[in-house]
Length: 240
Length: 113
Image (cartoon, rainbow over all chains, first blue to last red; front, side, top):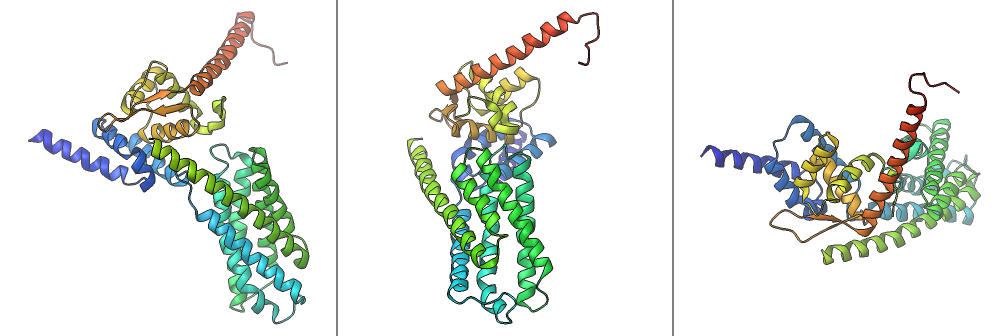
């Protein structure tokens, strides 16, 4: 009676920990991990290790997430639309109507760049290096502050120095991530990302056009890569 | 394919322990954990074990065999055997050099130049 109660308790505990992992991961490794956990007493260190493993599995899913790809597409399309609007009807950025016209597209682009950049950082894998880590910290911090500053501008609170500083930090982080990707053998993607970072600090008219072109290139490469990785993962899973 | 396990970052060390454990023959997760612990003297947590197995499988260094009940054995691939050999030869070179230096300087403190 005691034995079956212990077994039931271990099974329940194993199921709880396996449940921390993402669904696609559980489909592949869930049964064997549950079996292992039911046969091994779980100390505090093992429990912490499982939580860290579940976090890692969420950051490095066996089936690549489409979110960064979709985000890069949205960001590049919004930036391209804004660049086209600037080219079609050039106005000085201090013109009173500029912000009302430009903000929706810029806000959409900056908001979408955040998940796209996190997805690009994850491509660096387990050896992201100092440049990759500095890049992702600067890029996410810069884009977040830039986004908040743009929303504040939309609410007519303020617009100016903070926005420019945040955008510059975001671009420095973007360029650093590009350099890190080049260093990890992902040259086309890295070069385009570094170019996007440099374009982002260029004067608005030409800068937005170059920024949009570079991000469109990044998005297209991500789409091609995603299609390839998804089909190879499907192939592996079917074979297994 | 990383013939060099250093590309696996913080998973390089558990990778070496797992590849070594599998060099004896196919093993499932629990048996790998026990063998790795016996080899290194350090416990290999279940989260690290499966994060590392997933990476080694993704890099083609190990492959899964058909599951037996809920247990799935893994075995080294040819690439995994090459990677393990390269890693062990690298370690052997370091050990040989280190021991030779210590042998030369036995009884005298190493110089700082």
